[in-house]
Image (cartoon, rainbow, N blue to C red):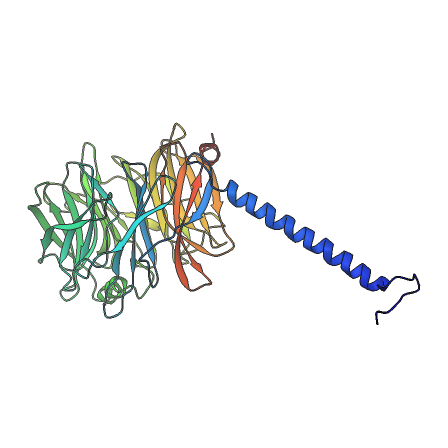
Length: 423
């Protein structure tokens, strides 16, 4: 028999109050669900709006090391990364293509003949290329079809062992940096536009550095900042960042033969303090990043460095530090015209486990603004590129339940991008 309360009803006051409370909770929950559904619906935005989204990849497995991204001719994005693979000493090469809205189109791992991608995504005559190596550590130049994901090796050099970096030159040739760990030298090779070899030079280094290069290529330690590039002007040169004599240094060489005679260098402090990234703006003027013995990054968007004459010491270049930037973070530095401004944009990982963007005027080096991109889960910077509508796309890696790698894309609209560059 139901208990009859003093009010004569079959429900005790406490029970009735509880039912009212539960009804209130249910209404609130339904309201939240409705709002969430509405918000989710509103997140299906047009390409010219701001958003972030996870990418539903098909073949991504194991861990992912994000390396680079570019905007393609169809206004989509091509992403380059690498992943460890069972039974292989070196990482497999991973490619991902998105459309202009950040939606998945295709992804793939290249086979075991194309391991350890060492270059950024290089553009030449409307096609994209990367340098990588086979299991015998010979060097492949691989051509990528960003429309359907087909790849082919257009040249293989079995005499260029253990590639560390590569880049395309303005006239359509290539530069390749490699190392010989047995004889202890850094190799620098110029490839002509017809893929014949113009010259190759070697530069000897200290015995202790071979082990560091070996750990780098096997991804057993924090990556070293190997790089190559071109300087135009009255005294054109090429440069590479590698071990040279007793330090990890940025070396300038003659374009015609790779000789260092009369050319300068930016000397490091062994591998403890050196140049992390360098972009040539014009002759003797560079945007760069260096790091010191505490792994603090210093951004230098307008450095005057003579490429002829006496060496420069990296620790004396000064630079700007940002408290939110993660020590020892990987750095990308790009020159772009964004929101009508010629700017230098640095991208790095920040202490909040997100991605930080830092913008400077490309001509004066004046700081324009910064922006932090963060989620509840940690994410790692993978690359960035301007979008066709005046915005900026940033790709990053995160993890689901701290175990499974996932690619995500942040899209800044034109208004937010203008704020970043002080517009």
